[in-house]
Length: 373
Image (cartoon, rainbow, N blue to C red; front, side, top):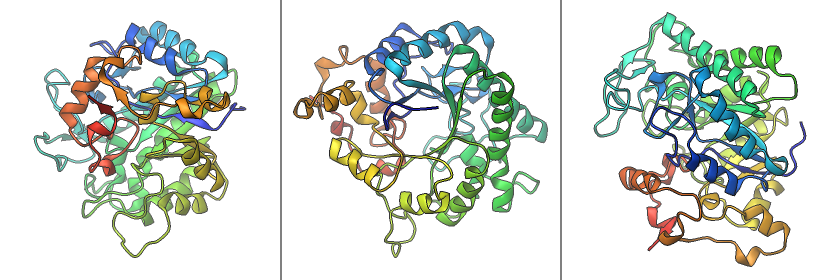
């Protein structure tokens, strides 16, 4: 597959899905404003099972009944050659029984997330783990039928796949826990299942991407040494790209103050050109993007900046860089396709802008960095 340029819109939560997970008119409008310029456009996360829903307004791809509206979303995103990618998620413990309408959240182990107010999940059984792997595969099939150009497996940002990889949230003693090899098994099984579906159903080239968070600050938690082993396996697994989720594209280790190399470059060396990388985190200006590409990283993803400036690529192509918006007035939200639920979401999560294309590492950022009164 040829992608027309190396700028990507990463998956961002704008909470525009309907209550049942269907694609809304607001979602279509939001997508229509941003498609056409970038090479790839990744949707907000879509849950692969009803019990994998992480927040209100989240898209769903857990049943064939969602196909007609998902097809409209794919078609909207694909204008002018943009490749449309559907991100697939299971929230695991990063949800609550209210969002799940009375059902207890699930995870690798019965351990609550180390955040205020989080519920203790139920540990998944062996059978349930395999059922979730199948659910990712079935969601991949639906993405193909809906006309998307690919799927991205969401293995980052503390959701279920990361919960299995983390020695903090995964304290199992079976084949799904313990050693780093066992902890990466869940993610690799999902990749393998999705790849089998693509080989069976896709009639044209169809991308399989994987998103990963390189480190955790908890102890025990994911460390770079674990991640480098994991990305080595991922690079040989059949994925088409690896999306490295960080709040700062040039961030160094969160746990080793002696480490001087940016994490993205350490991952790049480990991958060794076997698959393209997407780098994200605080990229705004053309100079920011050029720096990423000059480092030999294939794709640069602009998250919050694409909330503010839906025509970023078009303005760069036209030589109108001085007209790019880096701040947004609240009166412009409707014109930008940003609904009030997004503001509510940002207010609720406070300084954690993780689902706006970033990770928890942006805890020092303020909501006012995006919106000004």
